Image (cartoon, rainbow, N blue to C red; front, side, top):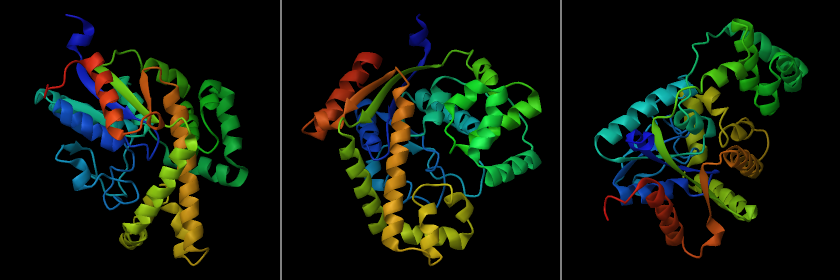
Length: 321
């Protein structure tokens, strides 16, 4: 029996925010009698359904969804935690003779899961992290990035200066272990993946069309109660977590009487467009992704049909056929 035949089949629908991942994942799950596993680092939190675009009951269309809204916003959760939970859920779905369909835009979650990354048990040093955060506040993120570059140039090269959390983690890991984090990451990729995965990416050839969808989505979020959701988070004392999420942090100045509501909405739209660009940069690096460009098709059903053909060719016949 081949290695692929022994692997668990998985479909992964990836791409930038507002590209239609959730709808396509549901359509494919319906064809293959599948269940959906979320790969979104913000949809794991309760009380943040509007701003993180958690699929509604109607949008789920009767398809079981997993790893949605199971944590309070003040609970910590790492990529290692995600991989551990997602592996268990995928195994359970497969044991029920259903097809696991991974859907989301958090590239680190998806890559770590599908590439079977082994995570080192690196301890954290809160005092060191606090010291590094203070240094960044005083001297800027680039100052810390230059420090990281001194002993881990490979990791530093891959990080944007705005990714302060990863920069600090790289410095912390080296100071605690003496081993560059990039070297630990290389060692973490030695075990083969247990999955035979078909990856489908959604995108637009005309990026302005994606940006228009993002802007409209933010407008719909406002209509669906985003501002009220943020006010409730603040009332519950969860604003610290919300402060890290696009679509939440931009409203804090407004709620404190600084700026207008229109300015806050425009900022959310702008930051969401920037995030979509970063997502595309991430997923473009993965040669396993089969890209479908939405604006190549006149009808969304054609997108579903093409995606189904790709899955059929790579994983086999749909259960309902």
